Length: 127
Length: 127
Image (cartoon, rainbow over all chains, first blue to last red; front, side, top):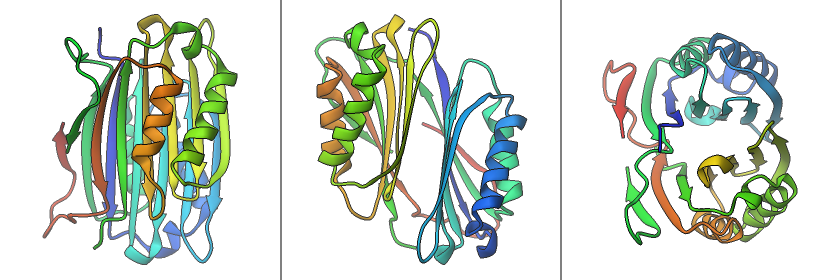
């Protein structure tokens, strides 16, 4: 089985709180990140929580992008799953720059490869 | 900074193709997985691709669930990010049982912890 796609797990710290709590900024940022990543947006949903925090989920022709913000920690978590076409690292760069993150961790997971051999079920790994 | 949530990365093989290509089954499965996981659904979008394959993205009060199917490989990729309340492993169990997956790999990532110390930027790890 081939490698079907790249899944980037992004943690970002030290972001300005006003950006993390601005659903319109996050909506524009997701649209721009998808565009810069060369992907195709199918559907976008952005939700603002009370008293603070925003979640955005973008359904792509290539899979998805999701972002969840915690303004109280100056932090957001995102993940970007691109299969086939597109440049997920460019999308990450757009996202972190638009959110003005000062510290970023990116974990990269290849999806769809390494099918377990034999009767293995529920292989469970902590990373 | 506390641990803000658990992100489960799920790969599932040897699923019946008719289930992988059935958007209504996947819609019902996502709703049921969110319910069994004790989470709250805010928004759900399911998209069927041509000639085959389905993507579903569920926005939760607790973060998100996303699923992407490749019927041609009898495979789906999903990820379930639960912060705060909820039981993501129960949601995974509901999802894999409903999709009749015979082989499953689960990778668990703690989100929001381990802020890089100092001036580290763009830490990049492959897992």
